[in-house]
Length: 95
Image 1 (cartoon, rainbow, N blue to C red):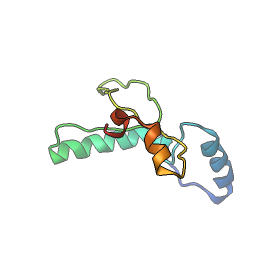
Image 2 (cartoon, rainbow, N blue to C red):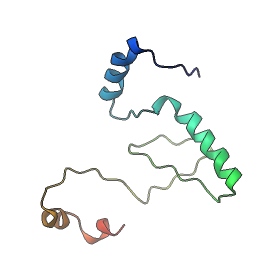
Image 3 (cartoon, one colour):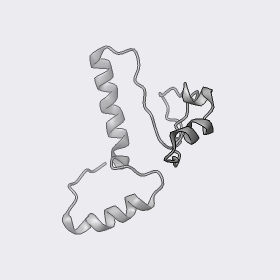
Image 4 (tube, rainbow, N blue to C red):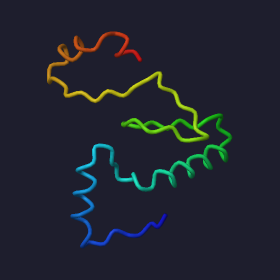
């Protein structure tokens, strides 16, 4: 992997690419680098585990356990909190 500084003349193309991808984030190309850094920090801190949360489904990576017990929902909310509360059952609100 080669990491280079974004040049001003490439900014528009980069923005177009990132904004047109449903799964892109600012760090999407550096994901593996970030995961490896997180693993090192987890080990250095003596933590029992590292939990990674994704907005979009990720393919299973060897050496990483998965937990699909919880999901993240992104909803367009009604400005009225009463209506929002009625749309989410108690299991969803208390998860």
